[in-house]
Image 1 (cartoon, rainbow, N blue to C red):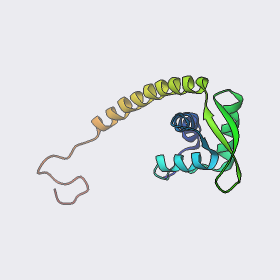
Image 2: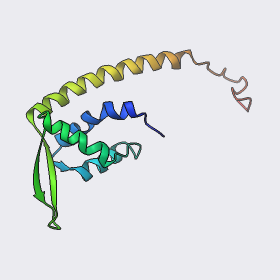
Image 3: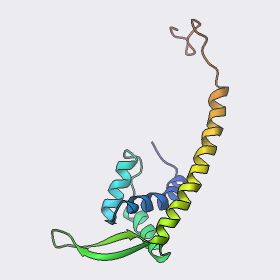
Image 4: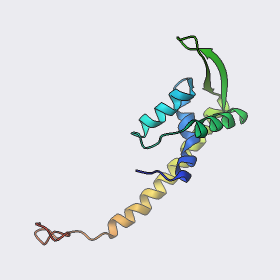
Length: 128
């Protein structure tokens, strides 16, 4: 399934802040967790993730520090800041409103869909 780029962009900040709310992480691990959380439907490239992390850092929502991995390789770790936690709470509230509105809009579509009559012909022309 292809996820529209506008939806990916709108969900990127709350996803990263939500991941970092559970603990510090580094770029590759964040991208891997996004893929896992989305059952593989969101596969972020470095060109999408790192500009987002840098913007969040510039805006004071995350802070970065360098650390050494077990292999001795340096990695930049990201941590959510108090301002980032406040922004996450605000985004959660915003997404709750959007999710509820979508649910209501889609429910009206589901309610309007024709329902098969019990014992009647199958909608696709097959057996009931």
